[in-house]
Length: 234
Image 1: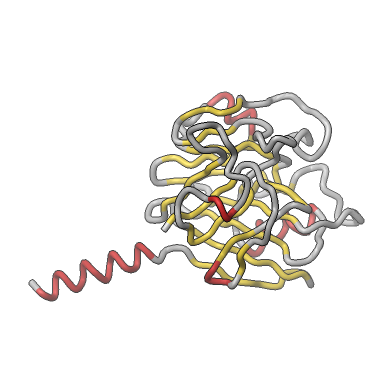
Image 2 (image 1 turned 90 degrees about the horizontal axis):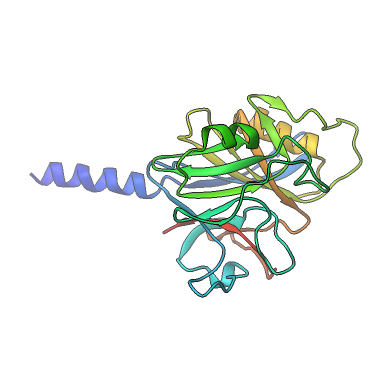
């Protein structure tokens, strides 16, 4: 009986510690990543409290977090740009048209958290399939689509920013959140997700405002006004 209890406790501990974070250098640039398993980690997205007041940053998260990062673009009042779903409640609608800026650089996509899996899904495909997302955030552009880089990314681009995003395995049982620790191009960032993190689908969250809260890595995220955020809760 004691051996069975010990085995159960070990299994619980292994599941509780599924989130792993680390740093890696890819093609001359440093990156920090956190990898989670949606089957064991509690991944959620937050934007505002019950009164509609935005949390606005990592210091006001509604739950203790092992990791958190900004999870999509937002307006000046911190309201999400594009689809945002929080605990099955749609806050803002899906946007399928092209438009200005990075968000409108089609194809863009949706990060969808379902029961037991989390996937990056291209927006038009999402609009057709409409999965039952408990949490979701639309952003753009897509970085990697079915193993291919976004068609508008140029290897010789000179536009470099600190960038963050999310990638997922094909079956949605593995999700990787990452931020560049030096300014990189879209092409460089997309190749990092595809070639180093081995995620066939990846989505850009933002650049310049990008932040990562990861106490295990000694990162408090700093002070920054943020809209939608994703976190791995304790």
